[in-house]
Image (tube, rainbow, N blue to C red; front, side, top):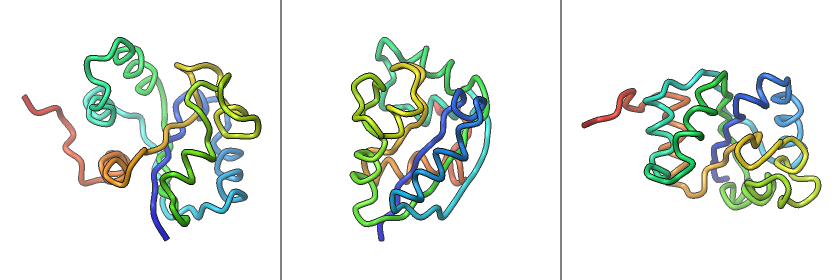
Amino acid sequence: MDRTFLMVKPRAVSEGLTGPILAELEKGGFRIVGLASRRLTSDEAHIFYDVHVGKPFFDTLLEFVTSGMTVGVLLEAPDAVPALRAFIGATDPEKAEPGTIRATYGKSLTQNAVHASDSPERVMHESAIHFGDCPRTIAG
């Protein structure tokens, strides 16, 4: 079994969609092995989304992800990273396949419901922010 990481974003949490999303993940063959709820600080969000620093949408992304509670979910499944990314669908809910998490629960490209790690390295990086072992401030 491989592990992957998913984060339920603030809008989905505040609208009570965490339970339905978790239920769909379990029905889809993913085993939940960790849950952590937290409101990300600006520094934590900056570290979490470090791959997007300098992109035009970065500030909007940070504002959104720090606007409320998030739920980090550590999952297990065969080929977990690509399996989860296929299961949740395209980032833009309008382009996501019907029945995927993002098509079902996403509102827009900037207000989508979930984030999923795109590599085993990012699983380690992103899950550390929710589950510990992460620097809490930006160095330099």
